[in-house]
Length: 274
Image: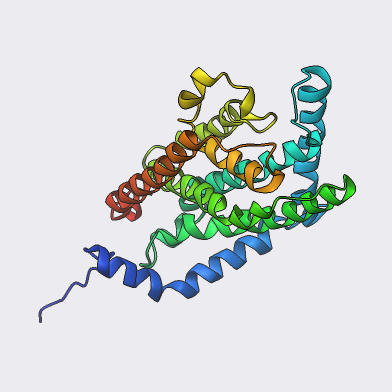
């Protein structure tokens, strides 16, 4: 009697793979909802951490960059300037960190059943989006407190949020795949996030960067994203450096594409390695 061996693996062509992603959309929703529920499980103040972390960071940055360094805020209240830059940065940092560790955190699922592994790092971004929305409400209350009216260009905010999402997912896909094979990378992620915070214009406006260096400074894709957030929220006082925006736009798409392709290349080996 002959035995037949059935091998279940991801679709070999991109068309089939995207069909698989749609077919497993309920799993994506389940993982997203599970991550939301357990994010602050057994914490003392629960979801208030989404407000407390950016609030404390804003206070510290205001003291350091305004009171001590005396950096300009261009007629915008400095706490609002910082918060408008911190929103996209924290969304990126949280999304990147969660996506990078998603495969290791769900390693038991990888060896038991087939589903598109891309679902794991992608679903982890939903939790960061919830945190972003909560922090955005805090920014709105802060603007009310300072009687500050946002620009009409705030309707373009989703574009810059999408750019931040592309950078976070692209980098997260790449590091998540590397994490499976080289566990050292989980220790590199916090360093990348911390270093990125220092070289990104979160606590200050990028307008203070000398003109001759701005094109090079824009090679950090989050510079264009943060500048875009401030441009869309704060109004004409914060002009958009268009060459930097175009560089960030191209880099965000390129990082996402490279991360996706590398993840797909390594995906078939995850169950064997982990």
